[in-house]
Image 1 (tube, rainbow, N blue to C red):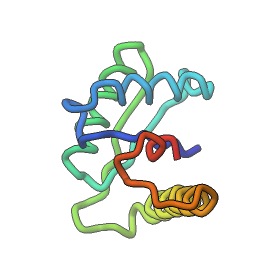
Image 2: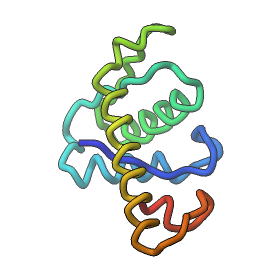
Image 3: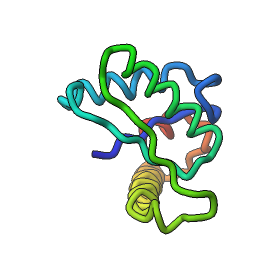
Image 4: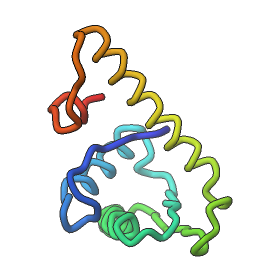
Length: 116
């Protein structure tokens, strides 16, 4: 599964709701009893979110760990990087199609952008 969450700023401190939403989505997907390993490239803002989700899940007695690739080893996250590129491509396609349909360009600050 791939979930995408629009955020104004990176990191758990600036976006407290993200960790709650991730835990809720994992539970809704039936993964509340499953061991979850979060993978990342060690970007500090993502590690903050990972830690926050891990704390929240572990508080609930759910087995959660982190598996971060070594710095500079982007090959280790190849599947994840590909999924991100695909998701970004879908968002761009939706934006361009919507712009074509309404006959004008949409500013990136427009409220529809997070929905796309």
